[in-house]
Amino acid sequence: MSNYLRPVLGLMMLALVAGLPASAVKGKGDKDKSDVLGSWSFQTKPYREGQCVMTGTMNLSPHPDEGLYTCELTAVEMCSMWGRSVVRQSCEARRFGDQVSIRSTIEEMLETKMPEMYYVPDNFTLTIQSHERMFGALVSAVTAPVEFRRANDGIS
Image (cartoon, rainbow, N blue to C red; front, side, top):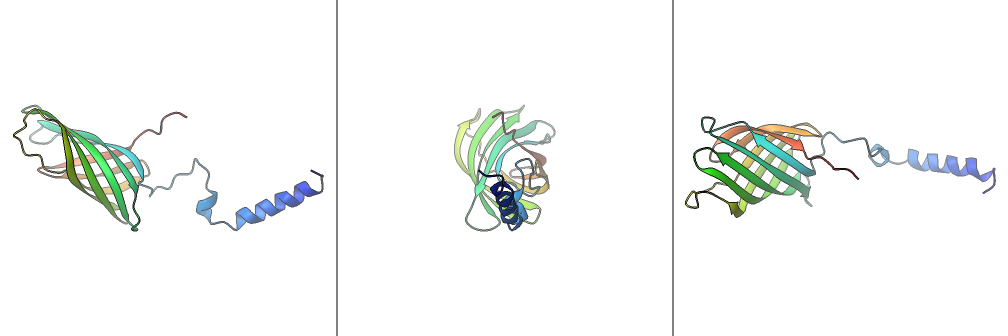
């Protein structure tokens, strides 16, 4: 390429990029603090007088309707009085500003120590704190504070 064309092409590229919306030219390191798509892990504070705690994972996927997400979660409830339950659930998340409401449906009991026990779907009400953290409450058979943390992206 001639020395004359290099600056002209550079100016053309700069003009093209300048015409794009800011979101289109963000670097990979720039994270939208409001973006909730992707993988999350969560943990409640102890509940049932300190005898139970719930941990798990959730994945939020895009949905065609604005403010709505498709999700799936796996909850692991550990209670000293009846052991461990692992439950796969489908869910729908609805977002209102910095609030996220998650409503779940049980798909499969993967593990339970007490098969006769009735398990209620795990719903959550959350507030987005940052791109990596949401905080709120488990609202199910019990209510307990819960923290959601962005799952690690791994090493590429």
